[in-house]
Image (cartoon, rainbow, N blue to C red):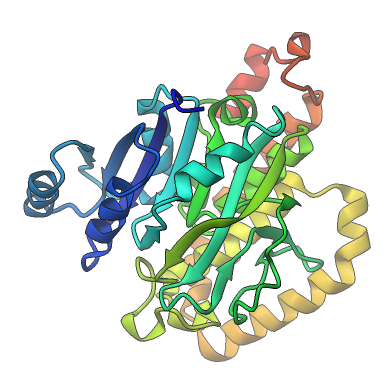
Length: 336
């Protein structure tokens, strides 16, 4: 394991000093074979110069536009040539043993393509995520979210997916599940992109493993919420209207792309109740979100095209290469 270089990809918009704290924690890792890539969406040359001066060994790519989270990660993954990819929000700090302990899980089983550590809030007492779960009402649910850490998630084992705040992936898995040239679906921008990727991976036989002693500390919402909402539950209350519209829209994209007809019918009553609550909140408290949702309606059509591709594509494993060929027609569906 000691000769495996890990690419750590950090996406930043230059908020506060989050990026510096994140990069310091990467530099302090006991596992030293790290290739650190920063995708800078701050649109501020002075910010980039300050970061490069403080961290001259990183690879920093300054974007001329805000690529948002998914397109930024796609760029970073394309820049990497390593076998393992660690995708990070800039508002996380890693325990010094995180990479060393989390990386070991990949060697338990060649079909482990995702690894989650235990993500705590910045005060180190409240759980932020112990892995991603697909809820009964078909939302992305973080195990243990906002509960006090009392040792209830100390058992390692298989889970559904990994939180996008600190997501460790096997590059071979990302290559197998990518859509055209994209690993993360750029239609998501951010929110639910981690659930979409985990669902796609599970459908193709990949697994996710939880390592409780690989610790991460997260300023929940530091990069996306208003300052008064950082670390607080009920994230929807502290997001700008356009971001809240993405949160609503992206759940529908996940369902259209990944849910089976049987699964949808089985969970339809809970899905209906959840949507009733969401749209009731929007209509009474955030009606301005409706125009943002309508503006993003075309993305739903794109999700149906991608679903059509997956319905035509036979599930295959990494050892069943004969089914891994994508026809030019289906490739065109994805690229569009």
